[in-house]
Amino acid sequence: MKEHIQNKIKQSTIETNRAKYNSYFDESVKAYLILQLKFMAICLFTLGFGYPWALCMKYRAKYHHTVVCGKRMKFIGKPMDLAHHWIWWWLLCIITLGIYALFLHVRMEKWTVANVIFEDVAQID
Image 1 (tube, rainbow, N blue to C red):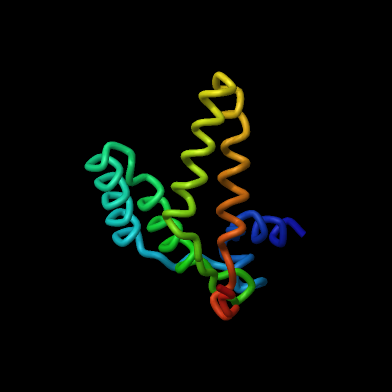
Image 2: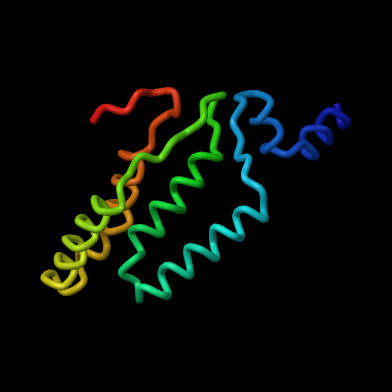
């Protein structure tokens, strides 16, 4: 019994769930670091105006390397769409004296999730 418990403790949930559900993230550390440098460079050189483009680039790479239950994910969001939302969200923050900022994280998550599909699903334009 004690050996069974020790085996369970030593085994990572990363490996357990990969075997059980075929869910994993397959991007290399090198590729991830290069992506982060590109993200920071775009944001820095555009003084933050390129943030929606950089974020879409980052999400595209992140979800391209994500597999859930054996199905690869795909990010279909467009930078101009995010920029449109971004402008409105920040205007609402100014109008409400910052109160709307409390909702920004949830709004951003909703936008992100609405733009993630499985790779084998046909996009409808």
